[in-house]
Image (cartoon, rainbow, N blue to C red; front, side, top):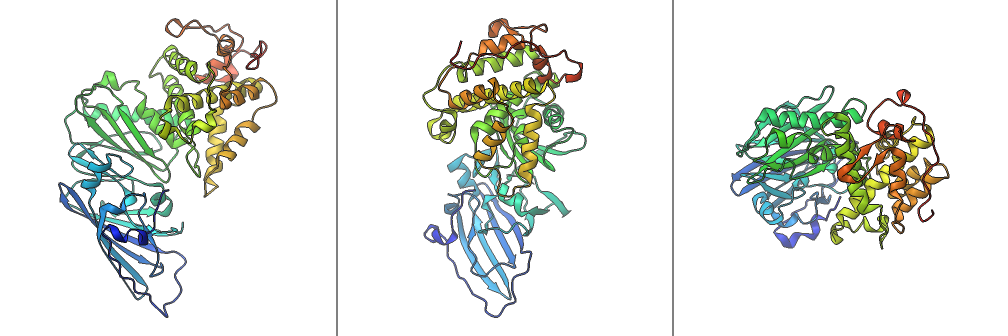
Length: 480
C-alpha cells in the first residue's frame, strides 16, 4: 500500500504538537485504535475524524492509506497524556472526489460520495494484532463493508482489513437484497433514478455472487462481501465499470447503466469479473497478467457453467481475445508488459495474454492428469497458501507454482511461449483437438473431437462421466 509519513506533509495544512510521555509503562501487547467519524457538511462532503490510540508511542508516525490524500486533510490536532494519543483532523472528501474521481481516493457517485478508508490515519507500521473500532456519527446516510459490533454505526475492524482497504459510501442509498447460501453478501444502490428495480438488481448480484461461490466450493472466498451499485445516467450498458478491494472483506463498487433493464443485466460480465477477484491469492504487489488475466478467463467460464450465457458465446469471446494475445507475436513479453500496463495502456495485451496463459495451463493440467486436476484446483490451492503468507505471494512464487505443475512436454512449452509472447501459438491446432471448429461467428462444438472431454470438463461436466482423452498433443510453438 502506498503511504507517506505525516511529518512530510506539514506544509500541506498540518499543524502538529507532540508530547513525549516519560515514565509510562510499556505499550500493551495489542494496540487499540478507536476512530470517530462525523460528516460535518453533506455538500461538499467534509468529515471530521477523531482518533484515540492506546499502546502506541506518543511520537508514532501516522499516515493515510493512499499517497496524495494528505493535501485534503487539514486542521490536525495531536495531544498525548497518560499513555493515550489523541488526534483529530478534517477530510475535505467532496473536494477530493471532484479532484480525483477515483474510488481508490474518492469519487462522486450521483449525489453521494464514495470515499476510500485510507482517509483514516494509522500508525506506520500497523501491528497486525491491533484492535480497531470505528464509530460513525452522521446525519448523512452511510454504508461500509465492516461488520457492525453492538450498534448499526459501530464497527469492529481488523488491522488486515484496514490495510486491505474499504469503500465507504456517504449519501442516500437503498439496501439491495442479495441471497448467497452460506455466505454474507450485502449490497446497496445509490439513490438515483434507474430502470431496473431493486429486486432485479438483487437477482443480478445474487446470480453473479453464486457463480463465484460455486467456483470456491460452495461459499464466497471472503467472510463478508459488500457492493456499492452506482447508476450511470444515459447508459443502457449493464456493467459499465467496477473496482474491487479484496483483502480482509470484499469491498466492491459497480457502475451500471441507469437505463439497463433485466435483459441487459442477465449474463453481463463486469459483476462476475469483479466478484471473482475475491478468489485471487493474496499478493505482495500487483501482478496484472495473473490477477486480471486469470479473472478474465474465469469470468467467461463461470458464466457459462452457471448457464447465464451459452457455451458457444463463451468460446467465441475467448477465441476472439486469444486471437489478439496468443495467435500473434509481440515485441514485449507478457511479464514485462504487465508492470507498466497502466502507464502504457496496453490493457488488452495484459488481460488477454494472462487469460490465454490460464487457458493453456488449464487444458495442459487436464490433459496430463486425465481430467483429474485442473487450474481450478491450483488457483484455490494458491489462495490457501497465500492465506498462510502474511506478506503475500511474490511473482516468483506464482510463476514457480504454475511451472511446477507441468511435466516436460507440450504444456510447458506452450505456457512459456504465452508468457514470452515472442512466437505466435498454433491455436487452431489446439482448438481442433478440443472440438472448437470454424470461425468465431460460425463456431461448432464437436463432441467427437479427441480432447472434447477436456472442453466439456472446463464447462463443469463431471470428468468421471466423460470419455477418455485421445490423440497426440499439439505441436510446440514455432514447429510444424
